[in-house]
Amino acid sequence: MRTLENGLAVSNRQDAVTYPLRCLKPLQYLAWRDRPMTVAKIREKQSRKGFKPGQSNNPSGRPYRSRNKSTLALETLLEGEGEAITRKTIENALNGDMTAIKLCIEMLIPLRKDGPICFDLTEMKSADDSAKAMASILRTLANGDITPNEASSVSRIIEAYRKTLETAELEDRLEALEQKV
Image (tube, rainbow, N blue to C red; front, side):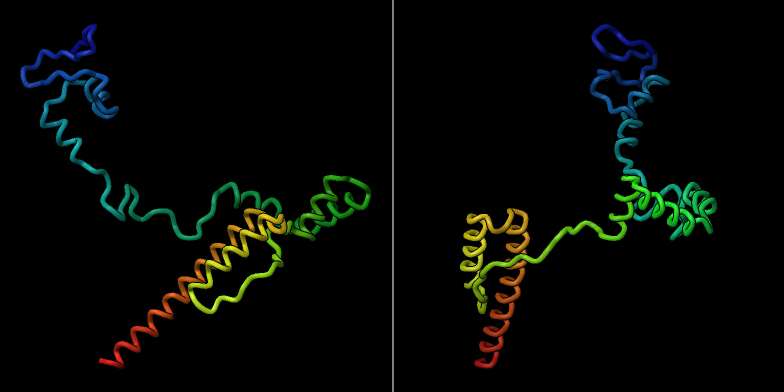
């Protein structure tokens, strides 16, 4: 097989079909380099989807809770030395080593990711009250009392609560209709 200047693959075989190489998928292109593929062979390769759902080349798979060899080796090296390493880090922190101080502080006082948000929010007794609650959040955000991320979090909570109230209201209405019938 040889490649012409216009990008076509040419073969001496009669049953081989020539395709522009740029139109072929990588798998087909590799097959073309070795030997030309017939139309039937190309269609057969395209029809295969790979592994069946839930199966792989290794049916037994990696055992549950198995651990990497490097992790096991590190644990073996550090086994029994954790207390001594911690004591040395604390001593270094007490001697003024800023890295050790930072490490100790991070371990003792983890970074606070979320905190309570204090602002006035109208009470929601029905799904219609959610519009008033959202307006209250928007007003608080506009005043700069809460951040956009905090407003977004509270909005998601209010939306979930609205859906719950709406579902409860629909259930009550459905029960009332069923009792009438």
